[in-house]
Image (cartoon, rainbow, N blue to C red; front, side, top):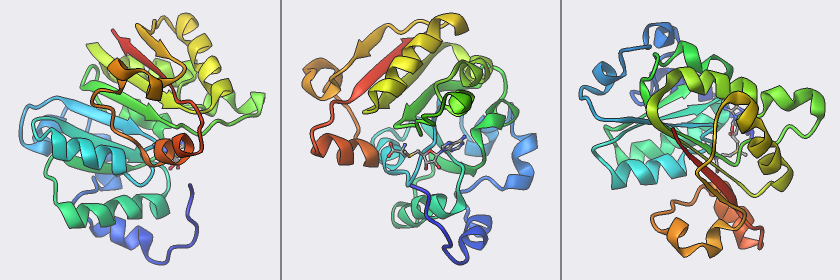
Length: 214
Ligand code: SAM
């Protein structure tokens, strides 16, 4: 997914009105309703990629504020370019490593977290970098509202099995688990496809998903 050497991507990001400036992130916890200028719920996607999922949701649900978090400037640039076609006041982006997510959102400030097709980091020694790992769950535990929701989708079965195993030690429980989302009519209702979901489901990979309602 990482697109290298896109000349000027950092400059475009710095100037985009859709991106929360990096030097203001420390001041963001507890101020997200002010940033959006309303008190609508806040839903975030961590590891957003090119932003298609959030762009679709933001169009469908103007009464929800969406924040996309992406580590790489060159990838975020694609999401910004899409924004310029659409101009959605309820969608913002942050360029950051999600390791610091609990320094950018306040306690219980987020109503829903989406993890979609997170990087698998297949080596055991990198397990703590996986976005559904217990280390990340501990950060989500801080920022997610008590009655909040966490949703995770992937076609990577080893990553999904790992993600399920991480829940109990971290004190979480999934109320919904499927190993074949696209053949579950009830769960597919309202499903918004991500870029990776489209790519992998089109070659026949089953999509796994869990949903946690706290
Ligand atoms: N969610 C999108 C989708 O489903 O199409 C993109 C999936 S892509 C495989 C994973 C994305 O997560 C990449 O763009 C990667 O740069 C980003 N990412 C991975 N680790 C991250 C982290 N620690 N913080 C922020 N973004 C991260």
